[in-house]
Length: 314
Ligand code: TXA
Ligand code: MG
Image (cartoon, rainbow, N blue to C red):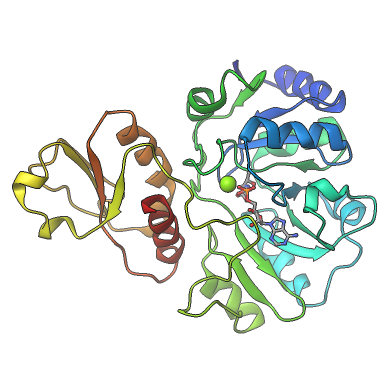
């Protein structure tokens, strides 16, 4: 059920979480499916609801440093400038975990991924629970992440008792994930451009090809709409092949497609990232034969956008 995130609704949701339930809630990146990190049965329910084939590690959401200390055993020195600059916000740091964090949350790893969301409703909810929340994106395994309560409702509405509605997620793309030890490395590109991080702590290790290393649980197929998607320059697609397809373009619409969407008329990558998943959900609901997505240059947020498009295309 979708419920507007009034102060009372947030308190009620906090009670559900304290009692071991699962609640979907808004963050500035995408909607999350949350459970109290210290209740393994509640965390297990997240995997059940998402129908993940394996127990991938989850991101733990905190509101302050005291809460961080309840899940992280230590904060490496290189993490300090990053959390001072980007927290609260869409940066996830992989840190050594405390023994109290259930294995299920970290999939047996010795580290825990933590972020401090900036979204006021996410923060109020965590405060109401009084405990950090383990939360993956609130979509079934492999599907497009939700940036609105309605997206969660459409995909998981029958399996989640409560979806807190906080409107559209401002960033619209997941947090950037960075690990610090043994060397700083990019595990997932995301809402904070890698260049911004590197300007503070120097070069991040990347996978061959210059993209991110693969974080556990990041399969090649991901973010996929039910409709087949390919990354292609729409201008090169013959008109006859456009008729029953949809197109996602960066700046300008393309003629001849059954549906044409523009991510940012001014070519602003932040706006494009914010509109990406919403646009995928929209086109996916139209019963199109195919979606053509225009590639964008891979600098700044363009890296995260291309990462999501490539995975959605698998
Ligand atoms: O923006 C976000 O990060 C959203 C919102 C809800 O906060 N959450 C999110 O969670 O994207 P999820 O489950 O869709 O992605 C979490 C990913 C895992 O697939 C895994 O790749 C990585 O985080 N991860 C979690 N714990 C890790 C760890 N200990 N070491 C390395 N990677 C980890
Ligand atoms: Mg996800």
